[in-house]
Length: 375
Image (tube, rainbow, N blue to C red; front, side, top):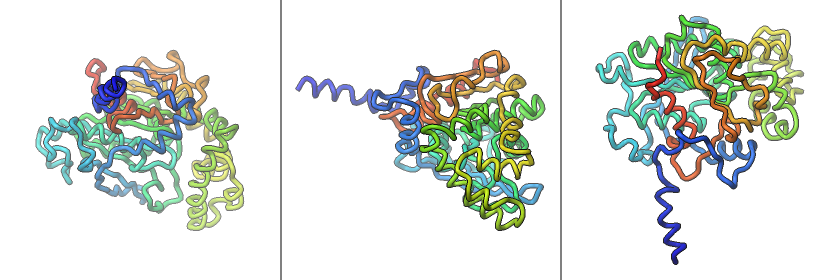
């Protein structure tokens, strides 16, 4: 009986929804050992907050389009005591942000760039959107071309170092919110593209945003591709990505005859194969190796002038720790946060709601840290 009372007394702690994780290093539950389990379980069990999105289509100068999902509010049952200090009306973004009052214009805007084959429904995107909405902030998930559920018009795909696309997207957000702080957060492939943009475009373009965060970014693309195409990774992850990318590539080939080699696409078994057959061709690289070399963000990290947080787990199956950048390979504006555990975009935190789990809490902690100067 005493044991029962002891367990009951611990329930408020175990199921607490307070922000208790960000200040401490991530520690995986004892029943979740290793990077593979921490990656897979997080993707299966971390569903993220239920977000009501409003879709907006941006027409581009090249004749194509990008779909943006604006996070408007949390679902009814996702509201927690975190929202008690905010009126529910404050959680709904105006259909025209430019008509909002002065207070509205000062709210931060969190812009998410998703990972390979991700979208606004990815658990990591919904978790961070939940955390942002809980504070009354604005949020948007910008879909890379071909990832919003509708094929794009041009024979162009998103790729790991598409800094020009990042520049276009963030410039558009700045034109909508001319006075608000804007924070950019990239996950996995989106994180690499964001980091490359930060280092490649330098001072002029980074003025569009105040801070940036990259989570589980494959900073060394070649090392990441080699890791994914070998060992257990080739069984667990590579087929998922290749099988998702193959039908899109074949559909593109059908719409634009002669552009791609269908036989090479059908025979692709690895990330390197699909990048050889599709990504490098559309990007204009000689081959996959040339594509990896030109689009890895690692060489650009020394040039970053904006406060930037890089979060990686040392047991990330997608990014071997020996290839992560060291302190002398990044600028003074970059904070390296290498956790011992966490997997790939994992960092699963049981017994708490999605917006208060370790990863979104760590991100929000950095974004709200006033000791870090915003540009």
